[in-house]
Length: 215
Image (tube, rainbow, N blue to C red; front, side, top):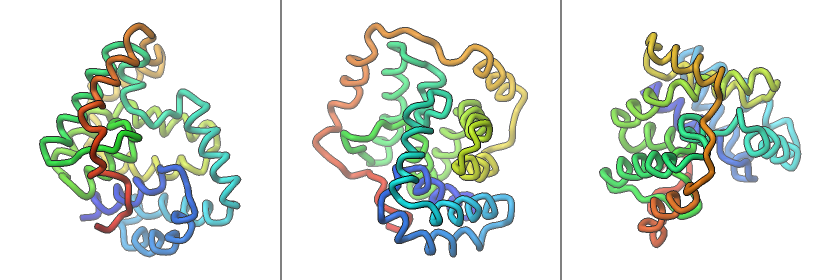
């Protein structure tokens, strides 16, 4: 249960912060404090820091870090596939997994956003979610490292996420090092169309959204 709980809390921390996040901060803190230290301490650190920052400043920081810095992007396939036509197929892979368990994303959410994957792993299907996170452990490690280098308070959230991941393998470590050196692949032809095709069948429903830790 500890693994699912840390991922559920982290999912909420990695969404663009609104007033609801501030209002529920103490609730998330109470949950984090029951976790083992390697999972709970990083989340507690982040939550205590975040609540002391005015909401508009926290929002500005979120945009600056996650939207303006490519190396901090929370979209996992942007690391593995970059701006290439293959990214559309990678997004379909996520969508098909969610669909298999009766979940449909809103048209506003891409399926590879780390907060979406974490919530799926925490609240919907921990086994399948663990596999998804394990497959994308290399980009998650690189996001954590980029946040640490930037001095962002969000690095603590990624510390907790990394602590919940499956055991590091030599292959994952090698992939992380290779991505860190080369960066994501670049190819702009055909990406927007591929993503549109991937998401279009699901745009009419909003069954799966980041609505909170408890359901």
